[in-house]
Length: 246
Image 1 (tube, rainbow, N blue to C red):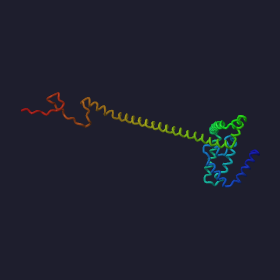
Image 2: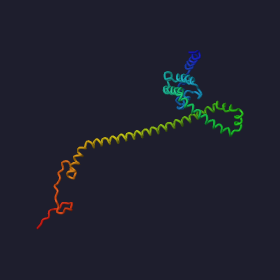
Image 3: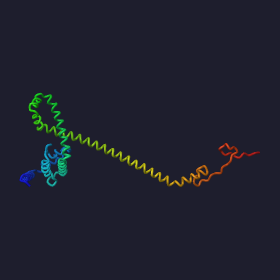
Image 4: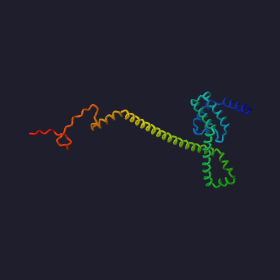
């Protein structure tokens, strides 16, 4: 460990020793009140902070609200929020996504700024004379940084809302496909059962067909056929009673 790191550790220990319980509690409240989609806010860092600055700030704040050192009932929750924030900012893909939204926010604010300058002749002339230095100075101001944080919140919220809506649609589509699959399986199951039942009654159907071919009528099992009576008129289909002759 270098002398610089040792000095930082000693400074951090001295700082933590002077922190009161009330200050620890206030930090827990601050962390839990942060905008959940912006890890820079949890760690109290600017958007241009380096990876080393993220690690250093996390160590400082995590020791401040560590459940073993802080008696606040939500210290564990705050500690977890800091850990998640560091994880996001150390992940190149997650960090890149957030910084992309920061870039979009800056572009929107710059476009808005240009419209405002068109109405303010003095500011417009000063901006042109300074060749961009006037705008750079404005972007470093507290006013611009506050606007940037708010705009980043708006963009991240909109992106998250769209993501959740898309996820909901995907879940609904997956549910529909699963239902269709189950209905198809049930249909094929019923078809197989019908075919098996049809095959089981094959011999009975063959026997019934043979009986039908012999008698011209499908006989029920165990049914006795009545004798056929001849009629005097062969063209009549009903049975006539015998006619008594005098």
